[in-house]
Image (cartoon, helix red, strand yellow):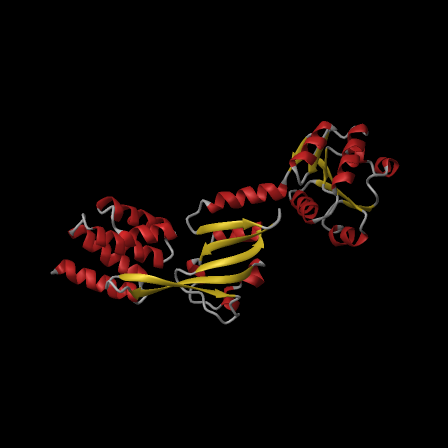
Length: 227
Length: 80
């Protein structure tokens, strides 16, 4: 029999996990207190329930004890309580999303079978892609957002910022363009003069060799790094 | 003569932001004179301008191996 899953908490992470599992053909039960979120995904999953997962009786009535894996993706305090309840109810495998190592430690102690750090994993993946020679530097603004300096991908050169689709297709903002102009130095040898175009306009063109300073989510910035 | 010609053409391309063409010319020139710090430096500039910082660094380092006092190469390497 196919494995069955419960996803508790429908933030970005919960939604994506539920959709991915459902697409793979698994039975997926989703639980959230927000009915609009349940409505958003209800047609894609086996069952959607608007309920408070910190309520033990409600969890029992939902048949949570029968799922093979429960994935918890809610705020810190609730995650601890829900994890504890799920283990007490006999859910064999509980996977919990954590945002900090301390939270991860607590969740493991109270019985979470696996703790995942999606934001951190995303940042690590980005850091790995930073070893790409095309990315110069990055600044972490939050677990989700950062600023990177990246050599303009060849695919984008010759296009205006608007045409590049960086904002529309990738959701990132071009904060500045660092551009080099070849010049003759006083010694009579070629050299570069550098300038920064701060807050470039939609019509500004991306040129070969430009360094783009981009603000966005790690996952989106990583996608651009792969262009 | 051929070397000077390649150097001049390479510089022309470099100054006109035709970096791939400049790279090609400087590589050809380096085949004729593989011990030239200047050519490695120019090749580094062409790589840098074309958005290939790792290759540029490598070329500046090669220029500095040949001429450790090459100030421009030091400066550009430091900036990357």
